[in-house]
Image 1 (cartoon, rainbow, N blue to C red):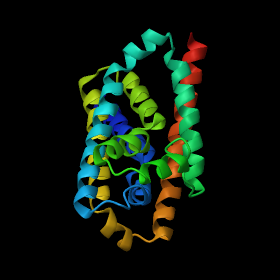
Image 2: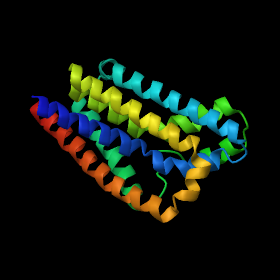
Image 3: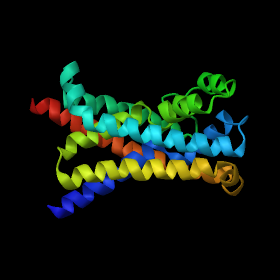
Image 4: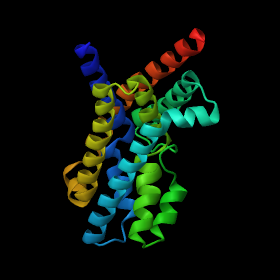
Length: 214
């Protein structure tokens, strides 16, 4: 039993971290905040990470209510979330920005603004960090946790660790970019994309099993 919970904890952290992908967000963050001062960048990083954490925690906690309100079965949501993750994973393995995370038009619009709070929430927190893929992931993970104390703690801890990592990377993005060559970032992204693809297939397979069982 404990071994299963530990295994779930590893899966939860891996899935959440890979789908949010803090490393891949560094170039996007630098592009969106290119007109900011160093202090404004640090402020935007902190508020974006906090907003993403709140968003993901709310959807994780309210996932069951959302399913009930819209009449969505867990199996169907797992398949839909798995397909979205698979599309993101394919883009990651090709070292290309995923349109499910943020688009070029959204980034261009953000560059034209100088409101730190607005940019920290859109597009940095939503949809760059807490995008549809991340939201679907935490909701599916919470459905599997079924509010078991250890599993539930694992899900919220995974969200917290991932958002902390995103905050630290964005906070030091200007310096990190100098020490992280694009080839190295692309290599990490391809590896994470492969692992995310495996998680996506597992979600889809689980959804199909749930639908067949009903």
